[in-house]
Image (tube, rainbow, N blue to C red; front, side, top):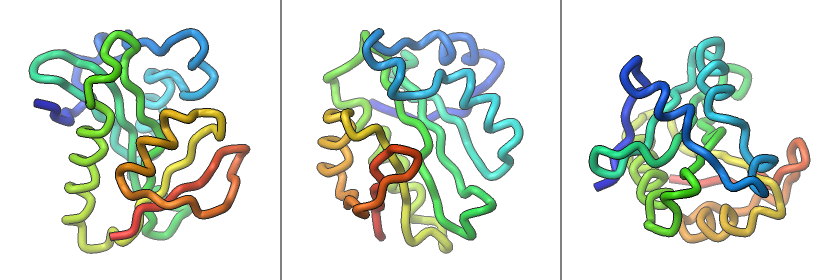
Length: 145
């Protein structure tokens, strides 16, 4: 079972130790960077992705102040040793279900490097739509409730 859990003193090291494949390191910021960013971006939440009791990934989302109520998924990563088990899809679906319950959440945005075919396939499968925009050299997608 996949769950989203808070980053704590007890799981911090295991979450920042999760790794991408070498060829993917330019696609996603390191988890430690995102956790530090959450410290100064107060409307954001870094989460550990667990499969049962095993940390397998990281998710960073929020409602960034400058976006006036828009919710964003800023980072999603699954450790290289835990791929192709459905964890990314389950984690994203869990997050979307939680955001759906927020009264002010009507849309969820995310972006990804255009060459990241796996991300594009995942987000298409979940129901995200291509906005047709490129932001900071990344494709911008939106999920509408």
